[in-house]
Image (cartoon, rainbow, N blue to C red):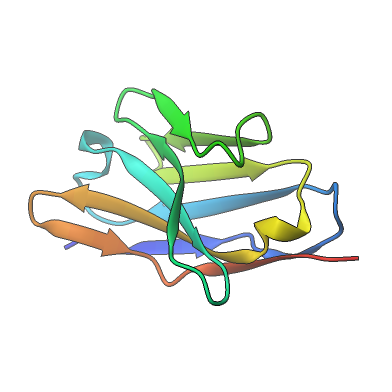
Length: 115
């Protein structure tokens, strides 16, 4: 069983920055890729960024050059640094891990970009 808890969301003005954190329980964290998703009202959940167990990363085109995913395996943490935020980044952000035992999700953290 893996538990994921996100934090760091909030209200920010366009052009601002936020850093999301995701704390994972369990001793399998370092073995698997970690992902950040987001879901805006009325839209499907979309993959924002992924980081492999060895630190390789990939991003959705909409966030490339603005968001950075990172992880600290010693602390069972994954982060999403979000810069140059836009109103269209407004969504609930979720961290997720896919294991042979299933996919696990956090409860989500709200990010609102508005002036």
